[in-house]
Image 1 (cartoon, rainbow, N blue to C red):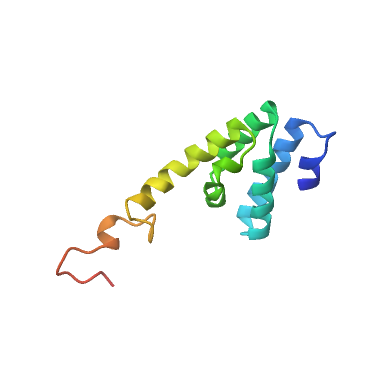
Image 2: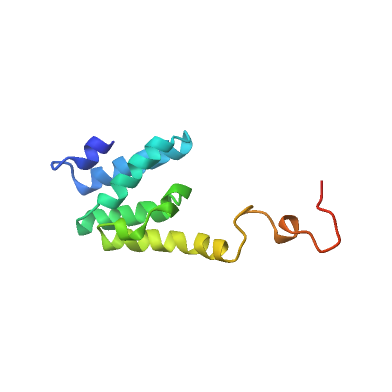
Length: 119
């Protein structure tokens, strides 16, 4: 997919489809090396049309690894905006000190004083 994405002769639509397929496969198969390749493709999107298509893909496929992209690395303003939007809830949760169990209710993470945690 990266070869298609990097090709000068590939249209923005085909590059976007290649990225979408790569993200779905990387997440579905839990392949970290593939996720790293997707990150490279995401940050290298430059022209306005491709940037907008990548923006839409990122919003549609909000994968954990995408939230760890540094927005400053993104060449496209649209891609940078998508990464910032996806990072905001996670950054807020981390700032609130609730990063150990991101989907757990607060009462399960920290039991009231004097009470033992549920087992």
